[in-house]
Image (cartoon, rainbow over all chains, first blue to last red; front, side, top):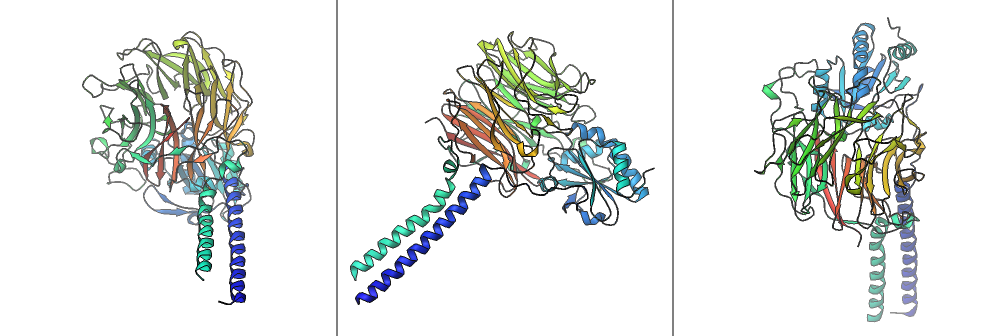
Length: 190
Length: 446
């Protein structure tokens, strides 16, 4: 092999080495940054649900196996109540949610319970024992709870017919709060 | 030519070694990213406990006097509903067998630190709606390594928030005594814990609501002898407790001194954690000492209680979850009392919340005064995973944060056991309607 050919091969080898070094360094920095972000830094706050902003979309299965989503209620106001069978304040507010559900049928709004951090068996038992009269969806993997940024149940979101959040109640909802929120969502509650 | 080829091969080999070492380096980046450093723990492979078909969940780990490691957890009962009861509610299940809330408590032992496990024994004599999550079963052992188990079941009308504490102990035939209820007022108690006292008896504590007004709950206790007979009636040891989280308890001075941690709630729904200390063997407790003024005001139900451990110097180590005064503060925190519980050092952040989520924690203190912590947090895929971290005996040096689960769904409520330089962690892994109990073990303090 000629000397010039050997030099050319060495040059190519050097360039390849530099490219590989650069690539490894880039991977290293990206990975380091990623791990640091994951382990030691507060994640950059993602925009959570807020009043007058669109409600995060979701699709869940109900206790009776049907799929339900925000679209299911498009065109009418929706009261979304996040609850758990083990939660004291959730249990305390259930008579009111039931009452709202009964009125909703007459007044044209929907009520959807979303069970979080719970099991199908426990929620079924709770629904029966507390005589819940509204549709219940199971958020078994906490994905909807997380997209609505809920630290603990109960939490209630009132969404207008266009899918815009009109009220957020963290903790037990009161009849006054529900009444006001439903007014905001263009419903007069008797 | 031969020399040239050899050189090329050598170069190539060097590059491959470098390139292949990158993922390994990346996986071990945490110590570099963390200015505080100590050892990383090397965990063994995951072991599943219980019957996968029965959705095991809510494990609790504890060593017995004979150095056997025990795990207690719950599983689905194989019969859908008692008396073939079918659901007839409006949720579309009329005529079908509804999923059953009935679960059983299982206890299994390992003589080799968790590498292998004896077949689990069912603890509850009658099938019941055994509760899990923060309210799961707990076990303690007498000096003969006999097991004493407590758990919670819903009250008479099925209300989980007005529940009952159940108890069974191992009998001489290798089985368990029939379960009995410990709370003297029905449908008023949950979140039980049981600890063997140094004098050979047992202390059982729970959150009680027999006095339903004012609303914050009461701390209730009872003492039990090794024969299972009650040594005291139920008695109130405190009030103002948050309605929904686990308690923590450690002994000192041969059982004369008792430290308990719980979460309090005030009339403005501000929830801070406190230490309660007894110097008369849990007969009476002094005024609660605030561990940290987190100012977490939350009207909802954050089921995540604190954990406490005591080291050989008498330092009290506490870990807990709080959101604090803003979501930016949220995370797992740690503090220590070096003056026998009179005061606590300013809280230190163990791991910040990576997203809005209640995190669960547990703590264990080694003979060498190292503190081991485990908790849940969300990974970069938004899944709740289990993490561990060690604080060296100097009280300053933290190990890197290690993620030790790779759940496809979410994990929940990791617990620790520690003995003979072996750290054990167990947790529930949940994926949709299925769950399993996962166990891992690591050598520590080497």
